[in-house]
Image (tube, rainbow, N blue to C red; front, side, top):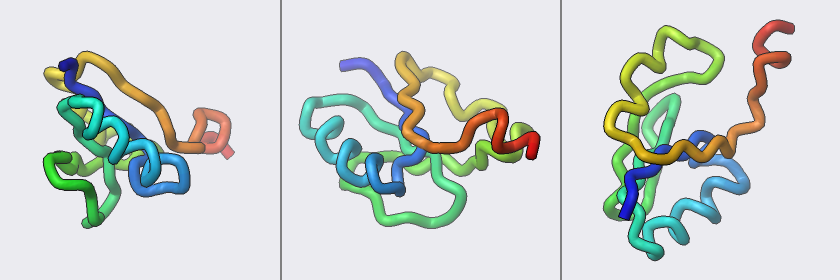
Length: 78
């Protein structure tokens, strides 16, 4: 199965989607800003979408990125 990085993994949609991705057999990483309770088998990756410098390397080795966070470039610029 492909490796997958999910942004917004601890949000409303992410907390429901992540367990299903794991059940489907994806090798999952979750982008988190701080410690978070994640399903067994999910690797937490520290980063903050509003701080691009914190994202260096987070998608290294990842086949698919699912953007489940509600943060957009417009929101960061405001």
